[in-house]
Image (tube, rainbow, N blue to C red):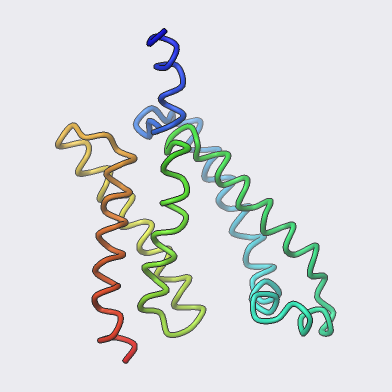
Length: 160
């Protein structure tokens, strides 16, 4: 019975070191496509986040933009489950965004910091796990959590 759990444990906690060159190529292609779509809908999505009724009055197709955003997030999650794991996806979506929200002064810096924190925690987590023989996904989440708490402490000093 325990042997059956091992089949699915990689989907729970992921195995980022098992990614192949072909899969990296597919991820890069999807990243470019998603980034292009995101740049096209960024302002509309931002206006919807402020007020959907005002965005609608400005001619923004609110339901369409919201559906596109949900589809983009779903694609990212779907592509990441195998390497990151189902249990870690939520923390990797939330922690960099929450950390950047602690110190960002506007929407553009919020997005920039979220990307920087994601890359920093991902690369640092890979390096630390590789040299210490620690599982990669949890290490990335721990580093994301540390970044969040650092920005939480700095929150009053930077914004205030």
